[in-house]
Image (cartoon, helix red, strand yellow):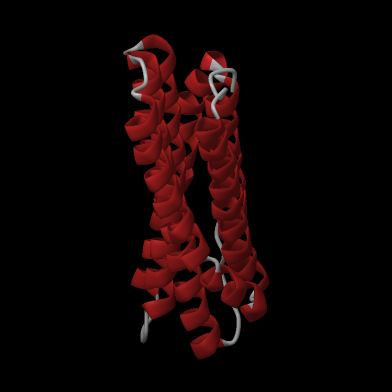
Length: 212
């Protein structure tokens, strides 16, 4: 990002890249654990949550330190504000990955494998691509890329609704424990929320670049 000319701003930029990479990696591991019924990947995703939380705290502290030491102009204050909000969205995306991993662990412990992954793989690929592009749009100050992310969110929402309908109809037709269906619905919802956080980040980039 061309505005990152102070050491403190470069530190924030580096940490934003890192938290973004870790949030997406945690999400990837959590979803692969679900699709592949792989408990090891699920556990790896769970363990990444603390690292992501710590990075958000570090970004907050670095941002406050920059404002305190540099008395920045208004455009840089807006940049710092967006960086703080971006780190929060990325941390929340990491929380959703953690939630997916924990629910998958519950399913695998109880059932041994995931029987109906519905459209989780396709949906997650869209959500994680949105998040990667949202981070890129912030670092490169790419308005067109950020605006495109907003439109892509609708497809993730559509797949989430289809997953819900499929799983709900299966539950109605079956007798006995429906816990796995409910947990899979919640996993689908978590992926939809990851896409929402990518959309939020894109909206913050648009605000940064246009003031609107």
